[in-house]
Amino acid sequence: MKVIGLSILFSLFSIMSNAQLSEVKSGVYKWSELPVKKGVQREGRKIMEGSSPHFSFLEVHATTQEKGAKPALPHTQDDIEEILIVKEGLMKMTMDGESQILPAGSAILIPPLVEQSLQNVGDGPLTYYVFMFKSKANTDIERSEKAGGAMFINSESLVFKPSKKGGRLDYLERPTAMCKNLEMHVTKLDGKGPSHAPHTHIDSEMVLVIEGETEMSIAGQTYSGKAGDLYLIKSNEHHGISNVGETPCRYLSFRWY
Image (cartoon, rainbow, N blue to C red; front, side, top):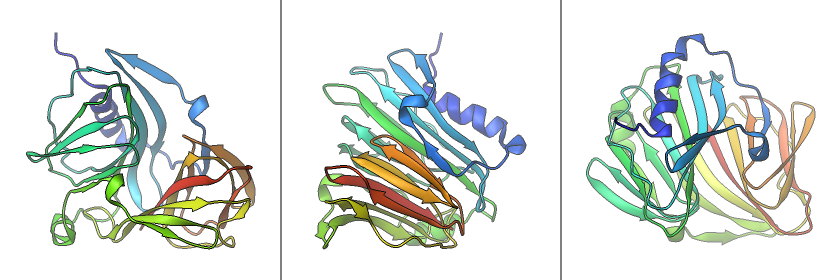
């Protein structure tokens, strides 16, 4: 009997129900409250699924593979773009025959029609987030290819840029097959206080807390988040994030429209 990976199962179920999805909710999605689905040497956590102001389909989940877990078979997505973020462990990622070994904090951009497979090659568990999305506008493969196509972003190759409040790591800013612009960066705040003044923008945004204790205001509501938690801010919602802990915080933001 063939065993299908949790990531592929999530993808199949999500695509089958795509036409029936309601819009995802802004706010915080807490790691400790996510239901866990067990598989063979792996487990999955469904974080959100629905539509959004710019996407007809948006689905986020996290998968943990144990050491030595059998890798999923290579596969492609016809009309879905993906971003993977390595939470812990060491991942071997292969796209269209090219492989790289990626540590925690690394990211992968996978356009539609790119063959992909991954494997846990570390000495412990591999946990990674998967963000899957389809634009309400037409998919633009040519735009993606002109901007660089599929991308491996090794966290160890990024350059930290200090600031008065801490600093940041820039991952990417470019068009993709599904986005007119997609921007990703990590912010570090050394002390208590806001990153910047509350504001709005046309982009929708997700903020993944990597370290520390944070507080986010979204459309008049206040939420708290620590490592592993994910904030969602939809287009034009007034928002702002602060470090509320006694130690530095770090969080990965990505914005799209």
